Length: 282
Image 1 (cartoon, one colour):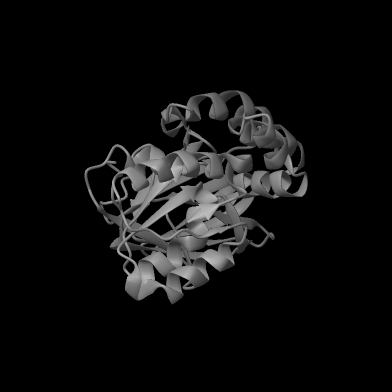
Image 2 (cartoon, one colour):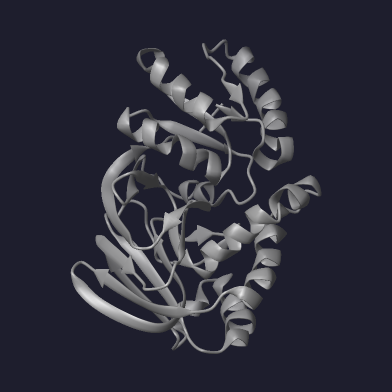
C-alpha cells in the first residue's frame, strides 16, 4: 500500500527502492498505489483471501486510515516510514512483540498511537486549515510542522474544564490544555507525550496538562516533553487505565493518530493484542 501523498512524494521514492529488493528475492506481491485511502481500504477487503501480509508506505495518517480493515481482517502489517511524523514506527522498531494493543474510540474508530483532546487537536486543525504540512514537507522539514502549529495555536486556544473518567473513577481538572490518551509514547513527530506508554501492556496512559499560564505551556512544557520530563511537573497529571471517558461543556476537537476524528465527548478503550505487526528483513 503506497500513499502517493505521504511525505510529499517520499513514499513513492522509498517504494521504488524497496521494489528492487522484492524483485531480487522473487517474492510475489501486488501493489496498490493511490492518493485515496478509500481505494486502499477497498483493496484490502477485496483481496483479503489472497493477502498474507501488508506493507504500508506512508506515515501515521496512512496507518490510521488502514488500521480498521487490517485489525478486523487479522492481517499482519509492517510500515516503511514515509510520512510527516512517523511516530508509530519509532515505538514498534524497539519492540520484540508482534501482537500489539489497539485503541478503540467511540465504537467506530481505531487508533494505533495517541488520542489527543484540546490543544494538540487545535494544532492539527490549524495545520490542516493553513496547509502547513504540505509547505514543510516540500522543504523536507516535516517535524517543524508541529512546532509552527504550536505557535499558531498558543494564541487562539483557551483551556477549559474537563471531566475525565479512568476505569470509572472521576477526575475534574480546570484550565486543561490537553489530554493525551496513549498506546505509544510519541506524537507530533517525536514529542514524548506519554513516556511510559507500552502498546503491549493492555493499558492506556493518560497525560493531562493543566494550568492558567499560557507561557508556561510554551517555555516549560514544550521543551521538557521532548524527553518526557514534563510528567514530573506539578501541572501535569499522569495515570493509567483501560477505559477512559473525556467530557467538557466546551466544543473541543479530538484527534487520533494525528487525524481529526470529531468532538468531545469521547470514550476510549483498549483492545489488547488486537494488532499484528512484523519487522521487515529483506
